[in-house]
Image 1: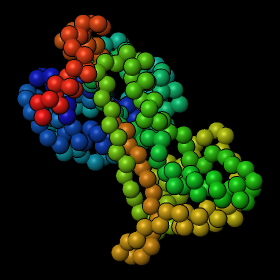
Image 2: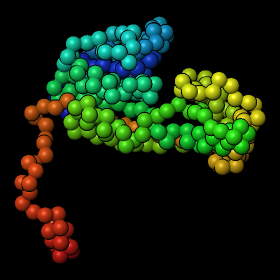
Image 3: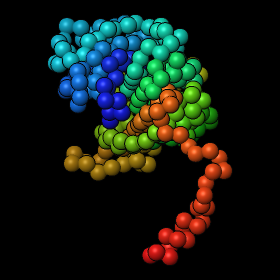
Image 4: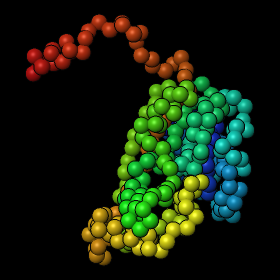
Amino acid sequence: MISKKAEGFPLALDIGAGLGHTYRAICSDDAFEGEGGIGGVRKMVLLDSSKEMLHADDDIPVEGSHRCEAYRLHADEEDKLPFPDGTFDLVLSSQSMHWVNDLPNLFKEVFRVLKPDGCFMFSMIGGATLEELRIALTLAELERDGGVSAHVGPFVELSDVGSLMQNAGFALPTIDIDTVKISYPSAPVLMEHLQRMGEGNASLRRRERIGVDVFLAASCIYDEMYPIESEEGRDIEASAQVIFAIGWTPHESQQKPARRGSAKHRVGEMVTEHKNQN
C-alpha cells in the first residue's frame, strides 16, 4: 500500500506506462488523506518508448482524472531518464521492465530521479514464467534437430532483484512473488496468445525459422507433461511468475540496523529462554 507519507506522493513517474492502466487505477479513488488519487498522487508522468501505445487511448476519457493530472512522454527507458535529480516522490512500473536490456542502469536512473525518502514500486515478470513451454520446446528441438535454442524471452530471477535494488542504492527493499497458473486448450493456442499480446521471443540469438515438426512435437510433449482437467475437458497449464518489489531512497527518518557488535544478547540465549517459558 502506498501510505508511508501523510501527504502522499504528489508527483509520480510510471515507467513503461503503455496504455495507462496504472494511471487509471490511481485515478479510480481518492487519497486517504489530502488531495489526489490513490496514494495522494496529484500528477503522473507516463513514460513509454512506444508513442503509439502512449496515445492509443487518448480519445477514451479516464474516470476520476480530476484527481490526478497526466503528462505523456515518449522516451526510451534504456537511455538516461530526461529529468533532473530528485524530481519524483514515487516511481512505478507494472509488467514492462522485462523488456529492458540494462536493468542495473535503469535502477540507478530511478534512484537518481527520486527525492530522498522516495519510493520505487514495481512488478515484473519472473524467471519461472512459461517454464512448461520452455521445457516442451527444448525437448522437441533436441529430439528433432539435435540441439537447442532460445524460444522464451529471458526474464530476471527472483534472487537477482534484491541485488539490483541494493546495488542501485535503495534502502529497505521488500520483495514478494506470486505464481499464476493459467489453462489453455493447447500449446498452439498459448503460443498464438503470446504472439497477439506482443510477448513473443525477442532474443537476438533466437532462430529465424523452426520446423513445423518441432512445433507439433512440442505440442504433444506439452500435452503429456502438463495436463490439467477442466470443465471443457483436458487442457494444459501455463505458469506466470510475478515479482513485486518496493525500495526507498535513503533518508534520516528511516529505521537503520544497530551498530555491528552492539547486541546485548545472543540468539541462542533468546531461543533457550523461549523454550524454558513453554
